[in-house]
Each structure stands twice: as structure tokens, then as C-alpha cells.
Length: 465
Ligand code: ATP
Ligand code: MN
Image (cartoon, rainbow, N blue to C red; front, side, top):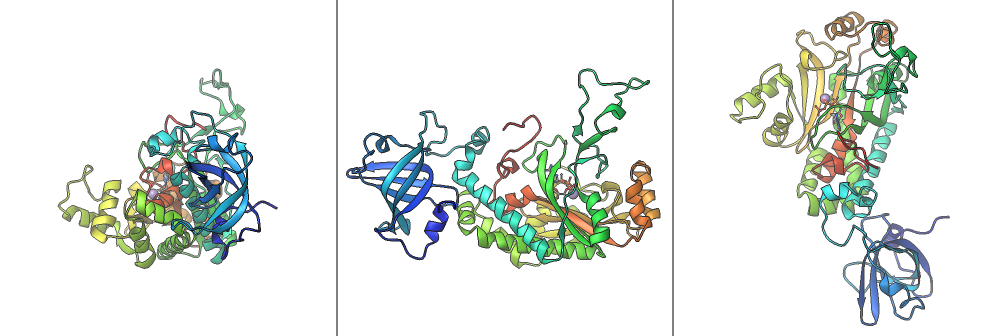
């Protein structure tokens, strides 16, 4: 079996005492030599805290090896886990043996000082060893598990939707092409256009922007499904909330309307955030103290307070009456910008708010047309600091209405044959939403830039590592 980790050692109810030996392995954060004894802070990433290693100069390799160890070195330590006399930690390890696994060259970039997040992005192969990124990775992990747990508890099946697709879910055209054609001299048809019939899939293909349409297929058989996978958008948005590759969580429910969808989104965020709060106490404490002082209060707001709900029309009226000058003017029919979303959730409501029933003109073709003929049964969940964290809708289940919306959007009936078929064979009201996983992690951690909550960010002009 694998050796014990720092987390397990620190969680012990009592230390082993001097006679018994434990083994810990990790990377040194700091090394301090004083007269007669050396202290090393060893971190193995299993939890936020490291464990203090106390080393006596009596060890056989003290002068030859240990004395010169520094930040970043990898070591394996055998020793006794004992109660620590210091107030900063419960236990420490009195080393009986220190084996150097990997020494560090002199130019190790992660010295014990504050580095800017921008600098750390440039060393994404080393930044997981920082306090902040370690905590981000553990929160991502806990949030992922909490998401699966929530759906599994509620009768949803995990669906593996395809990553390569031939349909553009949003109809927005912001897709990355998947092709094996020779970029220098692609085959061309008579008209001189690139002949994608000769391409790998026999037609144009791209990376998915959403698993929703496939999730709808599955929901029409399994009733409740969700996807949780990578999503790609070739949108040229250089913002702190957009990535070209991000992870999306998309539940889809048969026999569900917009109200049920909004209720699910609210229960989902509450339970997932609650579970992460329980699982990552130490990491969240760090974020609240060092990154963003509102982490705890914002989390509590989501977990404890009922989400406010308002229609788009009401939201526009509130914004118009606010007297606030926005960069983008507000008017019925225009999409809400991030500044409007944040104003609603931070200034008007002071907590999460679900905005529903948007104008059809600014929403996707598959959203269910309301009786007023002008709006659709869409919803966005807005939260303080982030703005939109979830976007969802009741889907159009009526074949004739769907066809009308598709024609308005200029979509080909032939392309979406199968999607229309679902409306011809046992169609039922259904709804779903998409949560941007990284936006949820931003909310949980208070990290300002979305590039710092994903291990290897992909953004316009950048896809290193
Ligand atoms: P926005 O208006 O913020 O660009 P959107 O309306 O294009 O988002 P949707 O298509 O509704 O987004 O996608 C569902 C969710 O996915 C959003 O609520 C958001 O949390 C997340 N999301 C969308 N685009 C991105 C992106 N480029 N990077 C990270 N997350 C994203
Ligand atoms: Mn949206």
C-alpha cells in the first residue's frame, strides 16, 4: 500500500510516540537551521498544512546533505510522530532518517516570497506547489465530487456526451474546428471551397460548446441525466471570467418546467457549496484570509438564503430606475452585461438572484417560447462578484414551434433532423442548465482571474503546458 500522507498524520487522534516510526514524503517549503537543531516544513499537497520535521545534527548525512537542503527539495523522512511543543501545530516529526529524493537547482523559481498570479501562470508546471494553487486544486476536487454526489443522490445518471461534434449547440459559430486536412493545401471542390467531404469525418466537425443537445437525447429515455466534461469556445473574450476550454456541468430533466429547473439550480448550488465548505475548511479559511475577505460571507449567503427571483423585464426596470450609469446602456431586448448582472446581485439583492424569461431574440433557438410570443423560458443564476454562473432553460418540446424558431435562427432542418425527431416521438416538457465549473470555483475561492482556478488555462493566444 501507499505510505501515509501528511493529512492522515495530522488527523491522528494521538501521536505514535518515540518508539514507533512513520514515514512522510514531500517537498520542503522552508528549512531553518538553528544551533543544535534544524526545522523543515514538509508539504505533500494532501492538505493545506505541512508538517514540521525536527532534525538533529547527529544524523549521519547531516553535514553532507541535510545542511544544504532548501526550498523545493524532495525528501523522505522516517521518524517519530510526537506532540509538538510549539503552538503552531499539533504534531511534528522527530527525524531518525532523512533521505534526499530530489535536490533542487539554484534557480528554483518558487522561493519563499509572494509571487504574482501572472508570474505563476508562466510556471504552471510548478505553481501547484504554491499554497494558493494547492488549495485551488483541492477545492476543484471537492467540488467535482460534491457535484457527482448531488446528482447521484437525486436520481440523475452521468452521461458521457461527445467532445467532437458536428452540430453547433448555440448556433453561435464560436467553435474550434477538428480537421485532419492538410492546412497548406486542402482539397477543394469545384467552387474552390475547402472540401470537407474529404476530411476525417466526411464533414465539418468541431469541439463541443455544450453537451446539452445530446443530454436531451438521453433525458428522453433515462429521465434525469447530467454531463460533466470539457467545453470549448473560440470566443475572443479576454476577460477574467472566460476560458477557451472550461468544464461544464449540464443536468437535463424530462418532465420538468422552468420553475423546476430554477428550483434544482438553487438546491444544487446550496448543497454543492455546503459540501465543499465541509470538505475544505482549511483551504477556504486560507482563501477568506488571504485572497478575498468575502469568501465566507458570500458562501453563507448562497447556502442559507433563498435565491431571489425576478423576470428579465423586472430586472431591466430595476436597472433603468437605478440611476446608475453603466458602460453599456440598459434597454428591454438587449442582453444583460456583466456589470448589470453584478449590480443586480450585489447592489439590488445582495445575494444570488435567478433572472427568468428573457427576450427570444437574445437567447438560443431551443428555449421554450412563452405565451407572450416575445420571451422564452430561460433563466440565468447570478451571484455576487461573478455575475452569471448558471444559464439554463425549459426546452421547446413542441415540434412546430421549434421548427419556427430554427427557421428564424437560420438553422438547417436537415442538420437537426434527430433533434426534431425527439419532438415527434414521445416528446415531453423538459429543462436543464449549464454551470460553468470554473466560475463556481472562482466563487468558492474568491480568485479574481478564471485563469488561476484551472490547472492549465487555454485563452486566446495562450495554450502552454
Ligand atoms: P457569458 O454570457 O458569461 O459569456 P454564456 O451565456 O455564453 O456566458 P452559456 O452558453 O449559458 O454561457 O454557458 C453556461 C455557463 O457556462 C455560463 O453560465 C458560464 O458559467 C459558463 N461559461 C460560458 N462561457 C464560458 C467561458 N468562456 N469560460 C468559462 N465559463 C464559461
Ligand atoms: Mn448564458
